[in-house]
Length: 171
Image 1 (cartoon, rainbow, N blue to C red):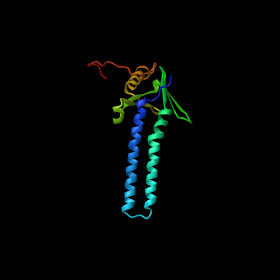
Image 2 (cartoon, one colour):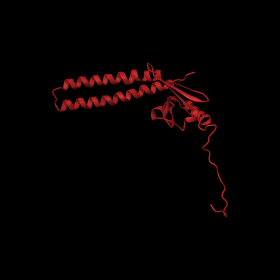
Image 3 (tube, rainbow, N blue to C red):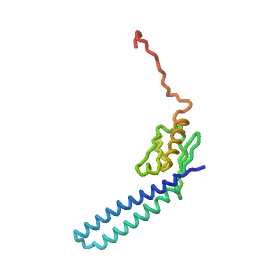
Image 4 (tube, rainbow, N blue to C red):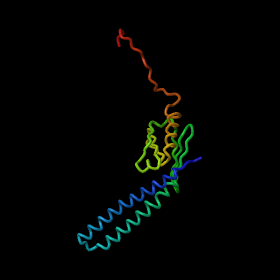
């Protein structure tokens, strides 16, 4: 069964969208004030464009992007691979064998920490694969699962042989 990001992840995306919109609004206000104080002839045009950009940012970052990201992301894992699916119209499916994963990190931002959410980042030789905005406990379970099942290939030919050295023997 395919899993999705945690429902609180949608709330984190909404809050992040509000923060991005406020940042864009500050730039628009600064640009409009500079046009006013520098007495540009196109002040009304600058004001209209600033309001339009702010409305666009609010619609995109607060309404469209969070719902889209919540809808498109699914993941699943079993004893041999991790399967990640992204996309709505054009679906991208990524399958990563567990033995190919070289390093696993659990990432928590300040906003994610408040809602007990985390991103799990899995590094392979081919790049980075991530599972975003899942519950912290689920991320820790997935991390332990990967370490238990995947990080060591069954027939590893790179094993080191340890030789004992006695003090009186030449090296």
